[in-house]
Length: 214
Length: 271
Image (cartoon, rainbow over all chains, first blue to last red; front, side, top):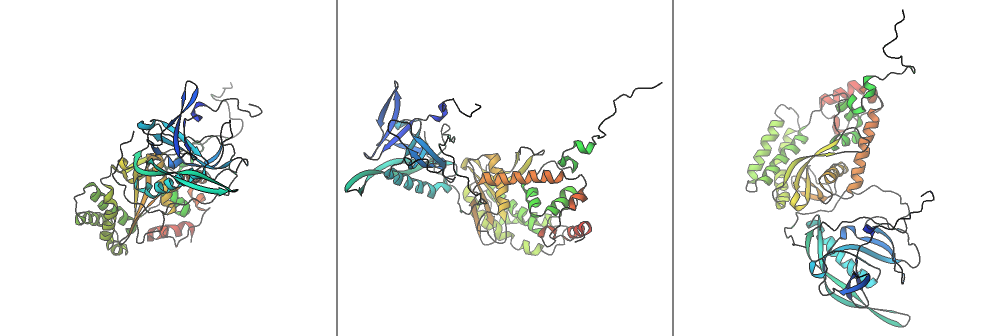
């Protein structure tokens, strides 16, 4: 290590199985590893999951064809890293815990598709609106619908589908849904530190509506 | 005949005294720090020296007793959901009178006049949370490099709701959590569980507001830095009067309102 090269692999803790939202088709897939091959299972209709929005990561992601994705992300609220290359696009990554009906395990969900980002942004708004009344809990969403979003450019019309996530309840954080910050391809530029705010958001007593989740 | 000494002489000429072997806190008989002592050191270092190093009296005024008494009444109302407001107010008044029994402070009447309304607003705000799972819980936090523990006592916790609240009484409700309170509550969150929603309820006669703590790690870190600064400051000297000579009290501060304290400040600092 005298020249500072790490020969170790990323480590199994860095490898989290994924779900993928296909914005062109408006479908949600679970990608499973079966006998060494990737197998995609359509879970659009059955999708129901607890979202770890508390640890949502935003920043830049590159999905090179045939290569591993590269993430330059920061936990929401932290300073976002610089855009590493022109191939990186604005995106998000978060962990979700699927209900038993659609998998039952913890999955990573990441995307740079604008249609997807619109949907996740709206879901995050719903989370923000109710989180004070559900301290320490995670929101549970279903994929209620997908709506077409038409964009025009260069004389072509492209239709993508934005997910419509519906907040249906809140659950205690599942024990296996633990956020561990992962390596970034680009460290954030040093920021001038400012005094932290103390808290000016008024909150009320939590509601007693505990969803029994998985 | 020459008799060899039992121990070889110390060559460097330096010997360790008992005081040298003690930590800065041990020298002053300080067994722990608390958010309150840290906030005092930050706001009024001379008051800290007066209380902790010179061991002078630290009389608590009617405003502090009002806080204690209102908390007692509200705690009663939370633990006994069927208790009437009047019953809680009576508990509050009884404690306030007991705490001020020997006081001749002219501010007693002013504070006594707001007790009932503060209990009412506090109960209105906190009863929807239900019966707390614990109250006045003791917490201890270890700060790396600090030779004493940092301790505190939180007011109310609802573990099943993941909420912890510290109650503050004041004549007006601030628009955000005050910095000393943010540091205090950050300690509770760090020790009771980071999943908790740590909150501060400000209870005034006509208004009440509960705010959620933000940036708790930063505030905890600030509290830890204050602790380490106190340790460094105390290590400057084992003579409390020398420490006193490094600071000047702002005698207009409420820390020196009490006439006895004011006199002591004058005798030590001549200001």
